[in-house]
Image (cartoon, rainbow over all chains, first blue to last red; front, side, top):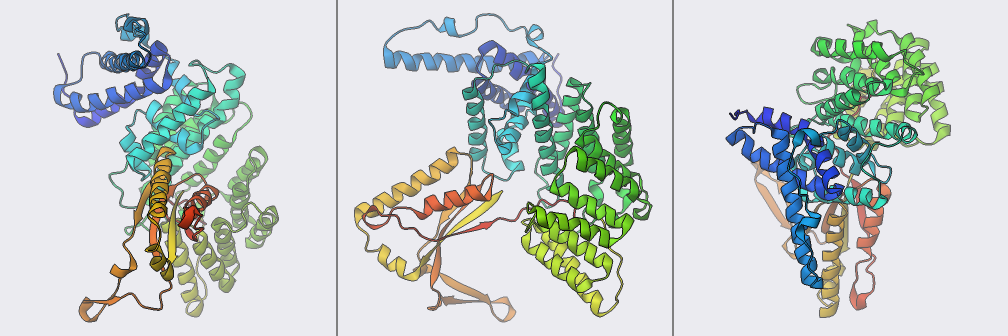
Length: 430
Length: 131
């Protein structure tokens, strides 16, 4: 008896099955690039057929069968092409698989994990790795991915195809990397998941309502990675970071899609259930081994989330966490956030002093974040004239429209306040 | 990161274009076709358009009650946008490389035109959290 499911459910089921189906087809045909295309075809066929005719009794087997048929057809036409070219006949059966589809024995729980590592192959650029991950592991269609990144579908198809060619050319076998290799490659996997989340979270502004929710997809994929790597505390840390950040989503923009900084957000809009979930997850892994950057960032997000009012924020705790983060994973952006947090505890002069190290460092020179942070600290100090200048400089340097609007509004607010009411409360965000 | 690459051609250049030989025009058209195809193949192409010649250009302003007032292109305009290309690339450096390839499109006698290409970053809707 076939079950008729609404589109959303069919969609979810398909995405969950995609990496398992791909794993089965790759192991059978030993051609990752072609198998990935065949699975995409099978998914598209299911998208059309399932909502109308109902989900087959064994959906996984159905997908493997359709994808395998595509592969066989492809092999046949390839042989036909060669026959035309060389006039040498070859038996189709020697290349096409003869055995029947038994979807249960075809499933290897490691397949999804193998694919996670494969999609984050060092030969790929991050944009290629992201696209391939969303398709091969996330089970999304090329059209959905193209739409999420606002590029034409043909461009995204090419990007994915090239990514697969690079992997194929590198000769990496379809198996789990060895333990040492795995430890080396895991940060790349986490980074790609983090980038997908970030793309989704930061782009959730705007009228692109039809766009795929990449933040949700990243959370789903990270959940999956966590289930596959239960002993890795950083995977759990990354998931906690995503949950704790995403929980604030409803509050981060106003009715005109303007950015609202953390200290001005309506905290009743924060998703308390998701915050509890994130904190519980983080607590369970915080003391596991030496602490990594994702757990530390999650801890910082948790401290913010725990404060019911902005003025209740435990800034000394945040400063301490940034100091740890500076040791574990130093970067100019960490230094910048540390400076802002330090200013909340020790005053703006301390923050400005810490920012000076970034001028010498040079990596953030001419970056709008540095200008914005300086503007913010100068405002705290009461030097409104200089703050306005730095807000405007920051606005000129950002390529993000919502950020530019926000920074221009900050400059305008301060410039107007300077001539009328001299004191304004500063805005804090991290 | 998305960048728009704009090719501006001096007004005088348009007049000269009419004087190109057939071979030169063919070579230029073939170059542009290949150029766009390669960007599609590399997964970087977003959009491209060529614009009609300045003869058809109008400058429009809103008049009283928003009624459009059209003018011919002002004689003091020295350059005109000939076409644009939008690419989605990994870095600004890559956008400059693409611009340089376009700039060297073949002109008369097959020599590179070395046209100036204005490269500007396209604003995104994405935003991080700011202090």
